[in-house]
Image 1 (cartoon, rainbow, N blue to C red):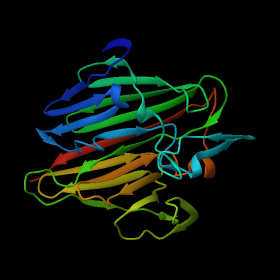
Image 2 (cartoon, one colour):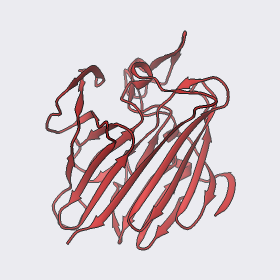
Image 3 (tube, rainbow, N blue to C red):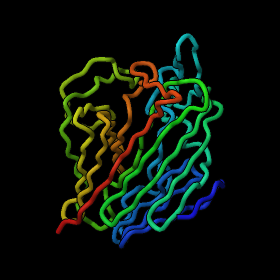
Image 4 (tube, rainbow, N blue to C red):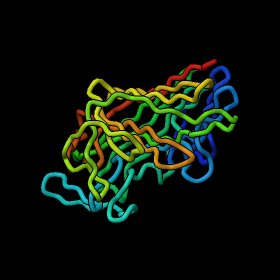
Amino acid sequence: MTTEETTDTRGVRLSAGDVELTVAPGNGCRVGSLRIGGTELLRQGPRFGSFPMVPWCGRVEQGQFRNGGRLHHLPVNAPPHAIHGTGRDVAWRTADVGTAAAAFTYDLADPWPYSGRVTQAFQLAPDSLTTIMSVETEGDSFPAQVGWHPWFLRDLGDGGAGVELSFQAEWQEERGDNHLPTGHRIEPRPGPWDDCFGMPGGVDVTLTWPGRLELKVTSRTEWVVVYDEQAEAVCVEPQSGPPNGLNTLPRLVTPIDPLELSMTWSWRRLG
Protein backbone atom coordinates (compact mmCIF):
# COMPACT_ATOMS: atom_id res chain seq x y z
CA MET A 1 0.00 0.00 0.00
CA THR A 2 1.05 3.59 -0.54
CA THR A 3 0.73 6.13 2.25
CA GLU A 4 -0.22 9.77 1.89
CA GLU A 5 -1.93 12.52 3.85
CA THR A 6 -3.63 14.57 1.16
CA THR A 7 -7.15 15.69 0.43
CA ASP A 8 -8.31 13.78 -2.66
CA THR A 9 -11.33 14.99 -4.61
CA ARG A 10 -11.05 12.19 -7.16
CA GLY A 11 -12.60 8.78 -6.81
CA VAL A 12 -10.35 6.06 -5.41
CA ARG A 13 -10.95 2.76 -7.20
CA LEU A 14 -10.42 -0.65 -5.61
CA SER A 15 -10.84 -4.02 -7.29
CA ALA A 16 -10.87 -7.71 -6.40
CA GLY A 17 -11.68 -10.24 -9.12
CA ASP A 18 -14.61 -8.85 -11.10
CA VAL A 19 -15.71 -6.55 -8.24
CA GLU A 20 -15.02 -2.81 -8.42
CA LEU A 21 -15.49 -0.27 -5.63
CA THR A 22 -15.19 3.52 -5.91
CA VAL A 23 -14.74 5.74 -2.84
CA ALA A 24 -15.04 9.54 -3.07
CA PRO A 25 -12.92 11.05 -0.26
CA GLY A 26 -13.69 14.56 -1.49
CA ASN A 27 -17.42 13.89 -1.19
CA GLY A 28 -17.72 12.82 2.43
CA CYS A 29 -15.76 9.59 1.92
CA ARG A 30 -18.85 8.10 0.33
CA VAL A 31 -18.81 4.81 -1.53
CA GLY A 32 -19.93 6.04 -4.91
CA SER A 33 -20.18 2.72 -6.70
CA LEU A 34 -20.10 -1.03 -6.09
CA ARG A 35 -20.12 -3.12 -9.24
CA ILE A 36 -20.21 -6.92 -9.09
CA GLY A 37 -19.60 -8.57 -12.43
CA GLY A 38 -20.39 -5.24 -14.10
CA THR A 39 -23.72 -4.80 -12.27
CA GLU A 40 -24.13 -1.66 -10.14
CA LEU A 41 -25.68 -2.28 -6.72
CA LEU A 42 -25.86 1.30 -5.40
CA ARG A 43 -28.12 4.10 -6.55
CA GLN A 44 -26.54 6.81 -8.68
CA GLY A 45 -27.56 10.46 -9.11
CA PRO A 46 -28.93 12.37 -6.07
CA ARG A 47 -28.76 10.50 -2.76
CA PHE A 48 -26.32 8.01 -4.21
CA GLY A 49 -23.92 5.37 -3.01
CA SER A 50 -23.28 4.79 0.70
CA PHE A 51 -22.16 7.52 3.09
CA PRO A 52 -20.69 7.39 6.61
CA MET A 53 -22.78 8.70 9.50
CA VAL A 54 -20.40 10.29 12.01
CA PRO A 55 -20.13 11.68 14.70
CA TRP A 56 -23.82 10.84 15.09
CA CYS A 57 -26.40 8.68 13.29
CA GLY A 58 -29.96 9.53 12.35
CA ARG A 59 -31.73 12.43 13.98
CA VAL A 60 -30.69 14.39 17.07
CA GLU A 61 -33.74 15.96 18.68
CA GLN A 62 -33.93 19.70 18.04
CA GLY A 63 -30.23 19.56 17.07
CA GLN A 64 -29.22 19.61 20.74
CA PHE A 65 -27.27 17.29 23.02
CA ARG A 66 -25.56 17.53 26.40
CA ASN A 67 -22.13 16.41 27.49
CA GLY A 68 -22.16 16.67 31.23
CA GLY A 69 -23.42 20.14 32.08
CA ARG A 70 -22.77 21.61 28.63
CA LEU A 71 -25.56 21.98 26.08
CA HIS A 72 -24.44 21.90 22.44
CA HIS A 73 -26.30 22.98 19.31
CA LEU A 74 -25.89 21.27 15.94
CA PRO A 75 -27.00 22.50 12.52
CA VAL A 76 -30.71 21.76 12.01
CA ASN A 77 -30.51 20.20 8.54
CA ALA A 78 -33.70 18.11 8.80
CA PRO A 79 -35.99 20.56 10.63
CA PRO A 80 -36.54 20.49 13.52
CA HIS A 81 -33.67 18.02 13.96
CA ALA A 82 -30.02 17.52 13.01
CA ILE A 83 -29.46 14.40 10.93
CA HIS A 84 -26.70 11.94 9.91
CA GLY A 85 -23.60 13.72 11.23
CA THR A 86 -21.12 16.03 9.56
CA GLY A 87 -18.64 13.55 8.08
CA ARG A 88 -20.61 13.25 4.84
CA ASP A 89 -20.25 17.02 4.26
CA VAL A 90 -16.46 17.33 4.36
CA ALA A 91 -13.44 16.24 2.34
CA TRP A 92 -11.45 13.39 3.86
CA ARG A 93 -7.71 12.82 3.47
CA THR A 94 -6.47 9.73 1.67
CA ALA A 95 -4.10 7.95 4.07
CA ASP A 96 -3.47 4.55 2.44
CA VAL A 97 -4.34 3.08 -0.95
CA GLY A 98 -3.73 -0.36 -2.41
CA THR A 99 -5.32 -2.51 -5.07
CA ALA A 100 -8.10 -3.79 -2.81
CA ALA A 101 -7.75 -1.70 0.38
CA ALA A 102 -7.77 1.96 1.37
CA ALA A 103 -8.02 4.18 4.44
CA PHE A 104 -9.15 7.79 4.87
CA THR A 105 -9.26 10.29 7.73
CA TYR A 106 -10.63 13.68 8.67
CA ASP A 107 -10.34 15.89 11.73
CA LEU A 108 -13.48 16.80 13.64
CA ALA A 109 -14.16 20.54 13.51
CA ASP A 110 -16.99 23.08 13.62
CA PRO A 111 -19.92 22.61 13.83
CA TRP A 112 -18.95 19.60 15.96
CA PRO A 113 -17.83 21.09 19.30
CA TYR A 114 -14.98 18.66 20.09
CA SER A 115 -11.63 17.89 18.49
CA GLY A 116 -10.76 14.42 17.32
CA ARG A 117 -10.03 12.25 14.31
CA VAL A 118 -12.23 9.92 12.29
CA THR A 119 -10.80 7.06 10.24
CA GLN A 120 -12.61 4.90 7.71
CA ALA A 121 -10.93 1.86 6.12
CA PHE A 122 -12.12 -0.44 3.32
CA GLN A 123 -11.05 -3.99 2.52
CA LEU A 124 -12.46 -5.47 -0.70
CA ALA A 125 -12.53 -9.17 -1.64
CA PRO A 126 -14.20 -10.99 -4.54
CA ASP A 127 -17.11 -11.92 -2.27
CA SER A 128 -17.16 -9.19 0.41
CA LEU A 129 -16.49 -5.64 1.51
CA THR A 130 -15.50 -4.87 5.10
CA THR A 131 -15.57 -1.28 6.33
CA ILE A 132 -14.19 -0.12 9.68
CA MET A 133 -14.79 3.33 11.15
CA SER A 134 -13.33 4.79 14.33
CA VAL A 135 -13.50 8.04 16.29
CA GLU A 136 -10.70 9.21 18.58
CA THR A 137 -10.62 12.27 20.79
CA GLU A 138 -7.74 14.73 20.86
CA GLY A 139 -8.78 16.19 24.20
CA ASP A 140 -12.08 16.11 26.07
CA SER A 141 -14.32 13.08 26.16
CA PHE A 142 -17.56 13.35 24.19
CA PRO A 143 -20.52 11.21 23.10
CA ALA A 144 -20.45 9.99 19.51
CA GLN A 145 -21.90 7.46 17.09
CA VAL A 146 -20.77 5.87 13.83
CA GLY A 147 -22.77 4.11 11.12
CA TRP A 148 -23.38 3.76 7.40
CA HIS A 149 -26.23 4.79 5.12
CA PRO A 150 -26.21 2.80 1.86
CA TRP A 151 -28.70 3.28 -0.97
CA PHE A 152 -29.08 -0.22 -2.45
CA LEU A 153 -30.87 -0.32 -5.78
CA ARG A 154 -34.29 -1.89 -5.59
CA ASP A 155 -34.08 -2.83 -9.28
CA LEU A 156 -30.76 -3.85 -10.84
CA GLY A 157 -31.94 -2.73 -14.27
CA ASP A 158 -31.89 -6.14 -15.93
CA GLY A 159 -35.62 -6.76 -15.96
CA GLY A 160 -35.55 -9.06 -12.93
CA ALA A 161 -37.64 -8.88 -9.78
CA GLY A 162 -36.97 -6.17 -7.22
CA VAL A 163 -34.94 -6.69 -4.07
CA GLU A 164 -36.39 -8.60 -1.12
CA LEU A 165 -35.43 -7.82 2.49
CA SER A 166 -35.16 -10.48 5.18
CA PHE A 167 -34.18 -10.12 8.85
CA GLN A 168 -35.14 -11.22 12.35
CA ALA A 169 -35.15 -8.48 14.98
CA GLU A 170 -35.81 -8.90 18.69
CA TRP A 171 -37.56 -5.55 18.86
CA GLN A 172 -38.48 -2.42 16.95
CA GLU A 173 -38.04 1.04 18.42
CA GLU A 174 -41.46 2.67 18.53
CA ARG A 175 -41.29 5.78 16.34
CA GLY A 176 -43.09 8.94 17.40
CA ASP A 177 -44.68 11.57 15.19
CA ASN A 178 -41.37 13.47 15.39
CA HIS A 179 -39.58 10.50 13.71
CA LEU A 180 -37.61 9.79 16.91
CA PRO A 181 -37.78 6.68 19.08
CA THR A 182 -40.24 7.13 21.94
CA GLY A 183 -38.20 4.95 24.29
CA HIS A 184 -40.63 2.03 24.01
CA ARG A 185 -39.72 -1.25 22.36
CA ILE A 186 -42.42 -3.02 20.36
CA GLU A 187 -42.80 -6.22 18.37
CA PRO A 188 -41.37 -5.78 14.88
CA ARG A 189 -44.06 -4.65 12.46
CA PRO A 190 -44.32 -5.19 8.69
CA GLY A 191 -42.98 -2.46 6.40
CA PRO A 192 -42.67 -0.09 4.79
CA TRP A 193 -40.11 1.12 7.32
CA ASP A 194 -38.15 4.12 8.40
CA ASP A 195 -37.42 2.42 11.69
CA CYS A 196 -34.72 1.25 14.06
CA PHE A 197 -34.53 -2.42 15.04
CA GLY A 198 -32.66 -4.22 17.79
CA MET A 199 -30.56 -7.31 17.10
CA PRO A 200 -28.62 -8.19 20.29
CA GLY A 201 -26.71 -10.96 18.52
CA GLY A 202 -25.45 -8.52 15.89
CA VAL A 203 -26.96 -6.97 12.79
CA ASP A 204 -27.79 -9.57 10.12
CA VAL A 205 -29.95 -8.45 7.19
CA THR A 206 -30.23 -10.18 3.80
CA LEU A 207 -31.04 -8.44 0.53
CA THR A 208 -31.98 -10.79 -2.32
CA TRP A 209 -32.39 -9.94 -5.97
CA PRO A 210 -34.13 -13.19 -6.98
CA GLY A 211 -32.16 -15.33 -9.37
CA ARG A 212 -29.21 -12.91 -9.48
CA LEU A 213 -27.59 -12.01 -6.18
CA GLU A 214 -27.84 -12.33 -2.40
CA LEU A 215 -26.10 -9.74 -0.20
CA LYS A 216 -25.83 -9.91 3.59
CA VAL A 217 -25.22 -6.85 5.77
CA THR A 218 -23.62 -7.84 9.07
CA SER A 219 -22.10 -5.99 12.02
CA ARG A 220 -21.45 -6.72 15.68
CA THR A 221 -23.62 -3.76 16.71
CA GLU A 222 -27.20 -4.44 17.77
CA TRP A 223 -28.72 -1.38 16.08
CA VAL A 224 -29.89 -1.10 12.48
CA VAL A 225 -32.21 1.32 10.71
CA VAL A 226 -34.15 -0.06 7.73
CA TYR A 227 -35.59 2.47 5.28
CA ASP A 228 -37.58 1.24 2.28
CA GLU A 229 -40.09 4.02 1.66
CA GLN A 230 -38.60 5.11 -1.67
CA ALA A 231 -39.30 3.52 -5.03
CA GLU A 232 -35.70 3.39 -6.29
CA ALA A 233 -33.66 2.19 -3.33
CA VAL A 234 -33.64 0.57 0.10
CA CYS A 235 -31.34 1.36 3.02
CA VAL A 236 -29.91 -1.00 5.66
CA GLU A 237 -27.97 1.13 8.14
CA PRO A 238 -25.91 -0.51 10.91
CA GLN A 239 -25.04 2.04 13.57
CA SER A 240 -23.45 2.08 17.01
CA GLY A 241 -26.58 3.40 18.73
CA PRO A 242 -30.19 4.32 18.06
CA PRO A 243 -31.41 7.56 16.49
CA ASN A 244 -31.12 10.41 19.00
CA GLY A 245 -28.62 8.25 20.85
CA LEU A 246 -26.42 11.24 21.73
CA ASN A 247 -29.22 12.07 24.17
CA THR A 248 -30.77 8.72 25.06
CA LEU A 249 -27.85 6.27 25.01
CA PRO A 250 -24.59 8.26 24.90
CA ARG A 251 -21.40 6.33 24.22
CA LEU A 252 -18.42 8.36 25.40
CA VAL A 253 -15.25 8.56 23.34
CA THR A 254 -12.39 9.01 25.83
CA PRO A 255 -8.61 9.30 25.47
CA ILE A 256 -8.27 5.60 26.39
CA ASP A 257 -11.45 4.29 24.76
CA PRO A 258 -12.07 5.28 21.13
CA LEU A 259 -15.24 4.26 19.32
CA GLU A 260 -14.81 1.67 16.56
CA LEU A 261 -17.30 -0.32 14.51
CA SER A 262 -17.05 -2.59 11.49
CA MET A 263 -19.60 -3.62 8.87
CA THR A 264 -19.38 -6.35 6.25
CA TRP A 265 -21.29 -6.77 3.02
CA SER A 266 -20.91 -10.32 1.73
CA TRP A 267 -22.52 -11.64 -1.42
CA ARG A 268 -23.06 -14.71 -3.52
CA ARG A 269 -24.40 -15.09 -7.02
CA LEU A 270 -27.67 -16.97 -7.54
CA GLY A 271 -28.76 -19.08 -10.47
